[in-house]
Length: 244
Image (cartoon, rainbow, N blue to C red; front, side):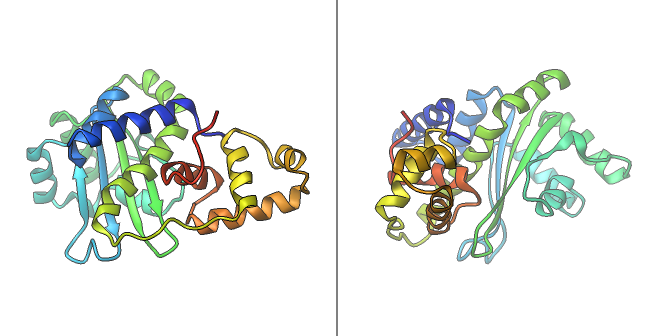
């Protein structure tokens, strides 16, 4: 899957917004406003050195909702947390069964606090056991929400990983970007431009199998969940240029 122009533009805008001195919460509000969302939330659950005393939370939710959520101990029942941790794919809140009283109460009160009635949660996992969740919330009508999901889900998934890195990296010990071989870089560059394994093989005069090997080793070095994630990380780290 090629990295979309809309994603690249959004990353450039976020970086410019960050360079102006805005903090992480303001950046999340910027993302929410840019996509017509009511709220955006990041929850770091298992992060080396960062979650020893509890989760790492960065949200645009109002303080009174956060306080109410904690007082009610909704985290024990919240399907946006529990279901997402059981999946590697984004979860659509509309798919959660709400027959349980506590879950109906949770979503009902969330609407009363102006959180929004529709949402998606994206699991974020690293090779070292890192676990985090990124959620986007909307009060769009159901039909508009489905259109939004269909058109923006790939970008939202990559933005989730970008926000994860943006929030956690300054708090962790800085390390040098991974060193990729020239062939790994070439394969990633063409993958970023939407070329298939077969097309990359023709361009670089390599077998399809060899292209797969180079992309897979690059993905491992970049700690990517898949090739799309590896491409996004390589662009963010300035290892490869954004697609033409």
